[in-house]
Length: 394
Ligand code: TXA
Ligand code: MG
Image 1 (tube, protein in one colour):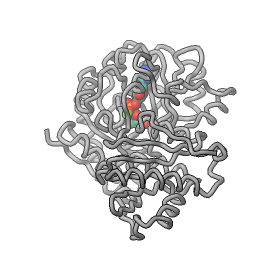
Image 2 (cartoon, rainbow, N blue to C red; image 1 turned 90 degrees about the vertical axis):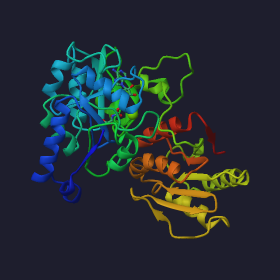
Image 3 (spheres, rainbow, N blue to C red; image 1 turned 90 degrees about the horizontal axis):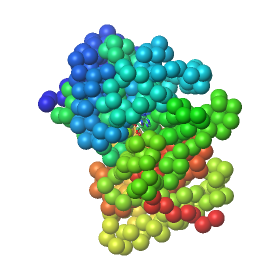
């Protein structure tokens, strides 16, 4: 199949949809209406969209991603009314969370109605619903006139996609079209909260943080244990997606968790982190492995300053705008300033993908404190590392 690329040239330049852009979106919406698949940008990551009410569209999404069909999809809407026919009942909690966080990077799980085919929900009696804020996503869903099921637009197991180029990498020839609306602002997938049970439960952290949820709920939100700790084989996760290896670059990866003194933020200057990363990467290079480091701007500078192997050279700037320093078997990726965790989140998946492109054979990543968006960053890093973590000594 030939995948059509609809580049929204004016939107990418001005942030506004021109008549020419809308024309392309109308064509993409027609594809969706007729059961075809279209990847499109949202404020979090790119989604791989299909008509949520057609079971065949859902089946095709699983096939295009190579995703197990027991891993349910998120249904995307543009107005609250569109949710009513999809769920059994709209609780007060659902209404207040929707009022606060929609449109935006937030997904709710509720008991589903008979309208939503089981194929869309991976056989579950609940359905995940999100109302995105991205103008392109909203216009595309609106024009299609149906709720749109959309998992992240990556091949199963790979890092989520945050640019159209990433989507082409993973899905070219497997879907009808890709809408290129530039790179995603947030960079990590939506926060997921299950409100189908007695007590709301955070299933996936994201840009709507647990701190923000606590304020709206009036008490701290319960966190599914699978968020912080990879599951054993015989455990059944709440979000079925949690049992699969995720976000993974090809090379094995280890995260260095910050010192306990760092838990309140990034008060220190990163020297101990840089020292640890230097030791680990030199040992890995001594084994002859091409070694990647993903770290903050501050730590990258220390590593460059103190290393004979890392010749001071101008960095490559990746298509996504990431600084990448490369020298004799070492690849250093700069995610941004330590305190600027929004930028870390935006760059994270691009960095994981780039490590494959630079043929890293072993990766080390600087961890962050697990509050605010740092909780989501660490959750994705931990999944990519498959449980390989080290603590920096306090
Ligand atoms: O930001 C996002 O949420 C992006 C954009 C495209 O909207 N979408 C996304 O979808 O990340 P996906 O399919 O990659 O992740 C959805 C997660 C999966 O882990 C899935 O298991 C969980 O949501 N999920 C969906 N429906 C569920 C349900 N009924 N019960 C529990 N977990 C559910
Ligand atoms: Mg995904």
